[in-house]
Image: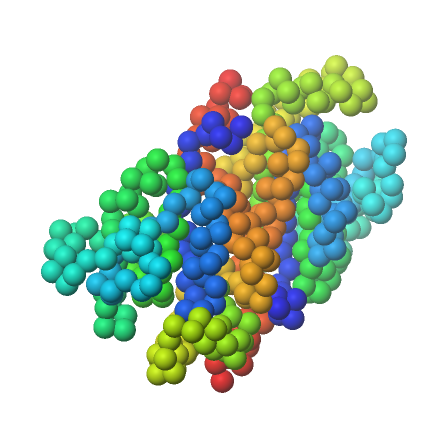
Length: 210
Length: 210
């Protein structure tokens, strides 16, 4: 029955320090939920091995990024490790308008910026904590892609990211990826059932009682 | 990990018109979730067949109910169909203090009264709608316990109850009891993960970053 009601899409933000499992969670969530789509960030960072244009990022050069900013085509953007990252506005607005949700894999800076837009009431902010910093460093080293210097920098950056936990609606501790994913799914399911997001309810109830 | 954090219990209100499945949902929820307990209302209504003192209600006479009111021992109370119903305060406060949740099977009047207490920030209000009024009447008649007059009165009362849907945080449409129960479980799981309810988080993060 819920399916016949027009729903307002929500902006579902997952933030965490690098290595806490956010990207894996996002991919697993998207695989079996057709009603949420990823916001693909634009970035000036060069592609890493295995990253695909349009799926992982929209890779642009500095001039391209400047043009996006100048055209008001980004909902938010920030500079991280010397590269710029931003959220293209058009795909987000189209998706919300279609009654689907948008998943954002962004950091505290991007989240703060989204919170300051008109879309703040559509925002659901989830922060994923690692169980410990030792475990976080173990996971970062396990990737095998980063030098000691980069790992140390990521650990410093993780501490900063974690210090913003208080700006999120929900806090998860990822000591078990399956449980953590179940928690993310529950939050998404619950938020979709909020009265304010079910736009067809007033008509549904009026018809019911008439 | 979540288990080691001290949690603030929440007051989980399920309201619906009689016949929309609320009582069945409540019982199923309680069976397999040890972290939520039912608030057993006090009432001056006589027991129905199968109802058990202390499980379904605390049955009291008019003088007993007067004494509860006089002793400020009720969080809320209301008169329905000529009988009084109220929520004993002590068991609720003890349960929340122990970090467990309390389930309330109460109507819009009781919900409004809880919303006006100090406990409003602990309140999560869920309303269950029937798919149609025809279906609701079918379910009420299916019980076989009520006369035509009582069914007609319950249908009038159902319309009043439904008219208060806008005072709830979450709205469910019960056209499939299993799905509806899954939605209730998701809401409960999500609400427990709200930052403000995880009292141990500030210490957890401080220890992590120290």
